[in-house]
Image (cartoon, rainbow, N blue to C red; front, side, top):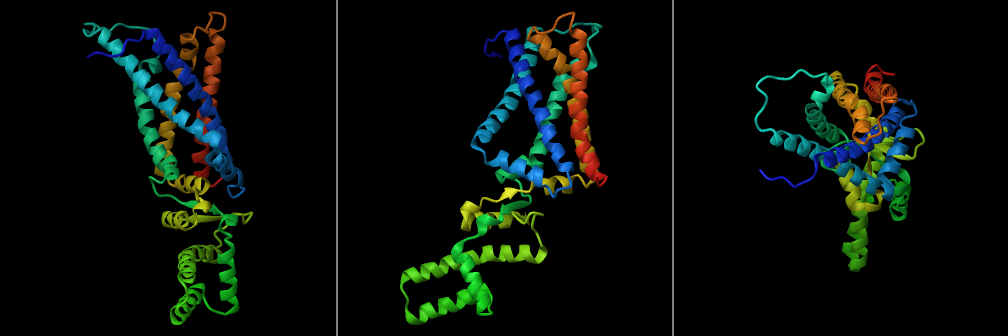
Length: 315
């Protein structure tokens, strides 16, 4: 089997650099997740998700992040494979070394993390892409179409429903043979009846955020309807609600805690290993790097774990 020629140390440096970037991202991601614990009806967390989902620079960085994850996985597998191919005949007797257990398990914890990431993406990121159904929210101001609001007010004055009003308008247009422009307007209003129905249901069920700026708990079908009829409305996933709903189930909480344990084992070795690979370690500072690695790993993992645990406990 022929693999592209790249020196082993070069591959290790690339793995360390990409891994370092991902560790910085994990700290950022963990900090943002803590917003879920605020009892503000998701105001902070939803605002953060809205910014992350609409800022063009963040979208570019998002693609870059996914690329870095893929690159880290490919480089690691490539490095492991080339190292194995370099010694096709194994030792007859396993050698005893002082290598930490987490170091020996790096490739396996990495594979498990990748598998867990697929489930994590299904819970959240794939919902954003529309590949998996979830719950959505939309800005109230984006549904304030002038013609639609006028029709709703006129229907209220006539003491009929918007649908009955549109039916009457269509009957009159057909009776008097109005021009196609009028029929086109009526067809447009008929389409917007679905939007009106979504708004009316929101009022009936009080599916509004605390600041009344968002309509929440929209279904996947509602999202598709709004995107078809009013593309500018651009409904967003309600990640705050979805996170709190998912973390109310013990088996999902347990699954995420297992995920965090695997991440802990992987980063426990990855932090000092990155310094060593990049030549940033020194016998004078090795103990400090080891301690910083432990502190970083515990902070990140406990920060992530706190969210599902505390949400499940109703806090």
